[in-house]
Amino acid sequence: MRKLTYFIACSIDGFIGDPEGDASAMMRFVDEEFLAFLKTEYPETLSTHGRRPLGIDDLPNQRFDTIVQGRASYDIALKEGITSPYAHLREYVASHTLKESPDPNVEIIADDLVGRVRELKAEDSGLGIYLCGGSVLAGELLDEIDELVIKTYPIVQGTGMPMFGAGFSVTEFALESVRTFKNGVLVRTYSRKR
Image (cartoon, rainbow, N blue to C red; front, top):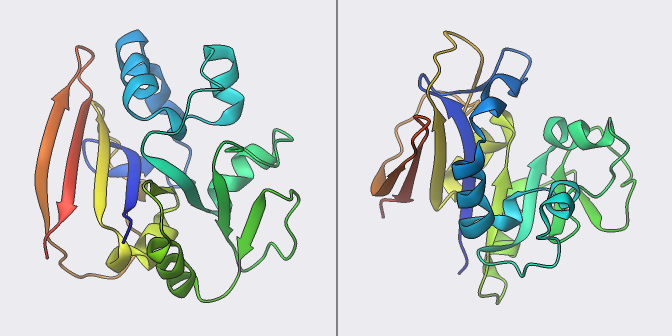
């Protein structure tokens, strides 16, 4: 069974964006050192549009071959006219409102999100599934998440969009590693306690 990994950026106080989901306040921390880490360790999490200018467009996927993202995350690319933001991956967008995919590389999951993700996890592949944003989406898939990779930026927002838009429940994860960067960013990796 392959892993579903929630790879997410957040503030110290656990918000992935402002109340509307805007995470631009965190972008200034993607400096040379941190970008080198992303290019080396998690290149497939960089959008296809972003990979090209970095000269890593043809770099093979190392950790993931599939992405699942929410409609709001997908809309960020659509507003820029990009219909397949992760063309180097199999792309799935969870949405009850987007009835038809604007791109042949993007499949819409309108019903039975958990069932579809379980099917993806059961596929025979050496690479995992990248859960890319959406507080609500992460909340809906919390029971399916096998790994958390949390990029914590050294800011406090006070309020905003939480990492998990779900009701109260306690789910335990075990800390696997912590990596620190000179600019104050931490990358923590957790695995689900079984």
